[in-house]
Image 1: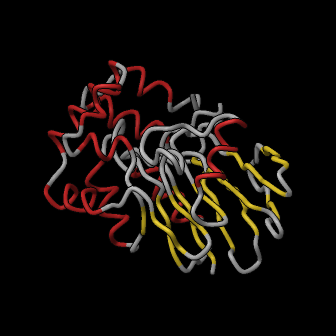
Image 2: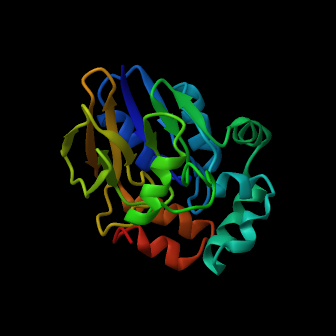
Length: 240
């Protein structure tokens, strides 16, 4: 099975559509949470994900959009954007977000937003957290988002290797346990503005990371028109 893996779209429809236009034919689409928040088109993003039959899990911004107390840990800009998101989303978006589970198992892969032991909140951003994540995985392999940075943690015989994939990087996963982050579609934070995503081939046991440029300026203009925080607008151009 070939799967398109997306994460942290953050209401950025222009980026999502650019990825979908470039992505190969796949059997399924998996979304790793934070479909909304920060960006200007939460309803349109959820509509698109529904149209393509995406399967997924909820992130902290998805829960916050539904009125959850996750908003209490947000910085000033994220909170302002979330308050706008709460006022903007429609009933269909709320229903879709509310139906998302915290974790989802598809074959040998467990999908979460944060980490296996804390699916909503924990960031897998270090070797020590990755080791704990492997211990908490109920399946051989895992997929997560939340950090907005593409990374692969690979385990074999108790040894853990960390790989920072670039665009076009293909990793062979045969004989390994893998914990993979596709990076962010809508708000990358690794210094590259282009949307980050991956294609997982479960039969060939490979994962391939891709980057897709999109019209950042048009998204910034839409955010400015809605008076969303300037810092959130500016960061899209720098991938930070």
